[in-house]
Length: 316
Image (cartoon, rainbow, N blue to C red):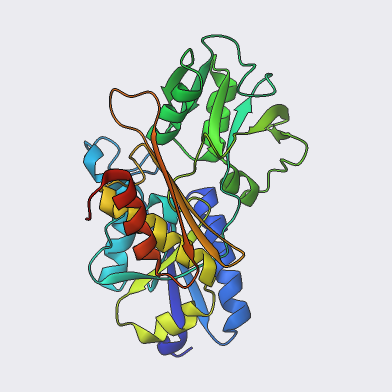
């Protein structure tokens, strides 16, 4: 087939990343049946058994070097045409020469507590051990219950579930979107993993505000690549992209990213644009919170600027 009709999708090799890429591939085939689609699996620093596993990680860089750096470099080099990302893993500052051209409709944004026996967060035993790889979730858990012993856990979704089963932990916290995309049925407040039943509790969004971009699959292309951008733009969910722009711009102003203890969430309902945030600072158990509303015709970046100014009394 003519190379001008070929599009190469780049993704990580985890089960979730492959599933999300398959969603993009299916949508592309439906909108552009004449396009040949190839998939390139790229190993990142965040993947288990990566050749970079022993390299030091700059925590100030968030997860950029963990989950997106290698994929973005492949995109800039022309080895792939579209980078498929979980939007929450992307740094808040855009990478020069690249742009988010489209997003799929947003999935559920809640975080879920997976436990071996307890039904909710509130009836975990005193001093219970809960695992999470997210700084935001760590702070939210400790804000909700100071007695909890929160431990760090890394790996993809099956790995984290396996670690829960193999360790003397009481629970772990995962994103609902990832679990459901992998086919786990959470409708009965439980899930089955390796033949074992685990309890599922949806954490309340008012206390566990999601990470910016949580539940969003972002499609990143090279700036100026009109051929690919035109094909990818057909998949875009306009409202989801508006919300993502607001969340990312707030993080940019805050100089935060997905490895910062920040929750930020934008919604659109009845012609109203709402953006709310939850920012944890060192030495304070409770977060600094804010919320702003505007008509839907307002630019997302202006909404983010208004929230930042309201919370911090300054422009940035």
